[in-house]
View 1 (cartoon, rainbow, N blue to C red):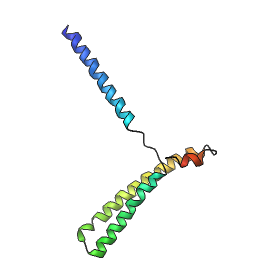
View 2: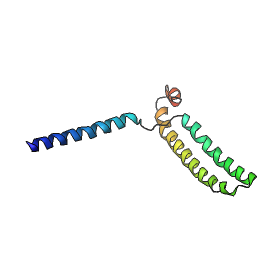
View 3: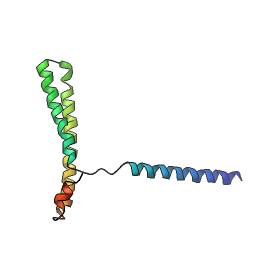
View 4: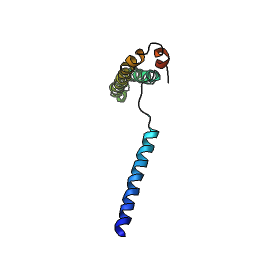
Length: 106
């Protein structure tokens, strides 16, 4: 009887893991490109430039290393947004009657 009990526990544990995985997949939507992505990445570049200019204008040496770090983050975000656009645009252009509406969906 103990063996049956252990088997039941094993089945319950597997079902619990499968249930948690399904819930996680429901909570995390797939990454998709949207035009609002550009609104999120644009300020990153502006922060990099503003940090560099503020460090120079106020003579704050501790800010100087932050500007290149912000630039690298901004460049990575811009690159990902552009890759998303390049990936999504051909699919939208394949349906010429709907591409305009689909490009501006959020």
